[in-house]
Each structure stands twice: as structure tokens, then as C-alpha cells.
Length: 381
Image 1 (cartoon, helix red, strand yellow):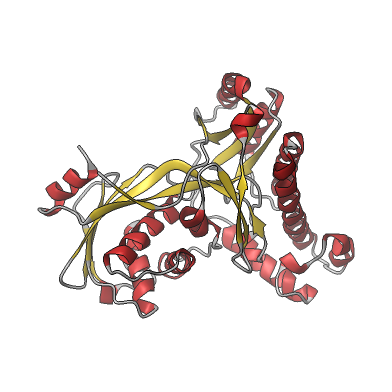
Image 2: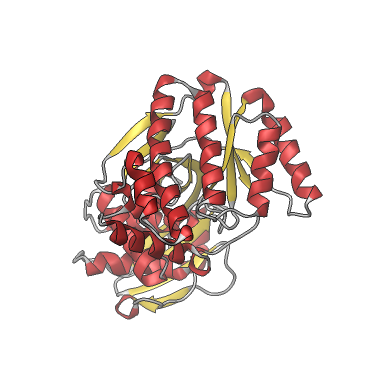
């Protein structure tokens, strides 16, 4: 049964349309977005879809095929930080942010079909937010730029849901182009599409979903962000993005706390790795791309300390099977890893990672080939 028919069964009328937004993986550039740095994500072909109709009042009703029970219902005038609680806050928060920006957004009925794994570090939350934001923009004929929709979706997550994410995920969901990675300067908002010519190079990118779930709101994410903000203040720069790589050692010597030094070192060197990866992609130097991916993982493991045993095991197994490079992706503490492998080596890497997980007593991972895909769009069911 299509989502349109399920919507009609749930709400007694058909939707005005169905909108979908993709999950994303970050090829490289982890924990740099909230430091005004550089990131290089690409969109997945796994999407979250939202069937939507407008209402004549200011009430929101939202249900999900992945959630049991009756639709969550709330007046938009009652939406605020912490209300509603749970997953519905991502939908309500988008409408709250749009109204707060002065846009005449009214009530809606929404039915969600989320095909992006939740808690895997693939930005299921941003996919949901951006599908709803695009639907509201089109149904209310607002004509907002996609960069503005991304900013409103980020505000929803930061303020209503209460997760202090950077803006990469929403921008990726709304700006990515099929067959490309999005080279994004998170300070200026400048974006450039960088071709990911995997087929021509005989390569594939594997996503290794460890099935170990984490919640950014309950993790050490907020603590890492505070540390970076305080370190930038101590160094006298607007953000850690402004610490030059050539000046890194001197800056580190001025910071007395060894933990803070490690955090700063990761952010500064990770920004450098993103820039180097873009150059390597443009020149077709895939061996260098793989080397930079692996160096990113080591930095995230040792300096930023957001990896964990299940991610390290997946990365080590992928590298041991012949992958050109591998790294955790996303916020960390579980979720997914990436591996850059020869097309003919996909099966061998999959088997090696599964064997390693079983030997350590970890859940069997879900491993799939990532196809760089397009941004949020209206579907035609």
C-alpha cells in the first residue's frame, strides 16, 4: 500500500502530496560543522517520506508507520522547547521555527514513513525535518531558499528537540546532487558539488551500520561542543576553524588541559583533511582519499574520543580485508562506519566485518553500498 493510501486510511482523506528527504553520510569532516569548519557529506538513497495535507486550524496531527499508537496531536501555539516530547518534536519544531520566522504556516496532518535508520548517524532526524519543511514551504507557497529551510530545520532540532547539532545534516538533505559530495563551508554557507566518480574508478563506498544505537542528546556531544567553544575563546579566535594548521603546535602549547588540546587538534587537523580530500577527489587520487579517511578515524578515536569498540572493530576489519580507507561517520558512540573498497572486494569486506563483529559478540551489522543521491524533493505516487 502506498503512503498516500495509508494517509487516507489514517486521516479519512488524501494528502496534498508526498515529500521525501534523504539521509546522509559524511565522507569526511566530523565534528567540524559546529566549529565553523568544512564538511563533505553526500546524500543516501534511503529517505524519509512525509505525506501531508493542510488543515483549516492550527493543529498538527502527526503519525508514523514506524511508531505504534494514535497520531500525536498538538496546537501549534502550544509548541515550545520540550513540547511535544519524543519524535514528533522534529515535525512540530519545524512548523514552530517557520512561524517564529514570520511565515504564515498553519496546521497539518502528517504521516511519516522513515526509511533512514534511527540512531545510526545517518541523519534520520534531519531527513524528517527537511521533508516536512519542504512540504510546508510548497503547500504555503512561501518560496523560501533551501538554505533558509535548512536553517529553520536546524533551529527546530536545536531549540524544540534540544539537540545542539551543527547545520551540516539539514544542508546535505536539501542541497546534495546525485553522484556528488557536498563540499560545504559551514561558516559562509558556500557549497560546491564535488563529483564522486566511484564507478569510473572501480570503487564502492560501504556503509557499515553497527546496529549499536546512540542518542546525541544523551551522549557527550554537548560536552565536546562546549569544550570547543571555550577553547576558541581561550585562543582568541571566533571558532576553531580559525586556528591555522601551521600554528597548531603553538596554540596547543598555550592550552593547559591535555583533553582540550586533543579536542582542538582533532578539529584543526580534520578541517585540513577535508580540504585535502576535495583536492584528491578532483585529481582522482583515491589512495589519498582512503588514507585521509583512515587518519580521520584515528583522530576521532584518539583525540576527539567519540569512537567505541564496535566502530573500531568494523574499521580495523575493513582495512584488514583490503579497504583503501575506513572511518566512523556521524556523531560517534555507535552508529555507522564507512569503507572505501574496490568494487570486486565488496563481498570480502562485508564478510570480514561480519566475522569480526561475531567474534567480539557485537550485533550483526547491516552493510550496504552507498549510492550518492539527490536532495529532498516532492514524490509522485
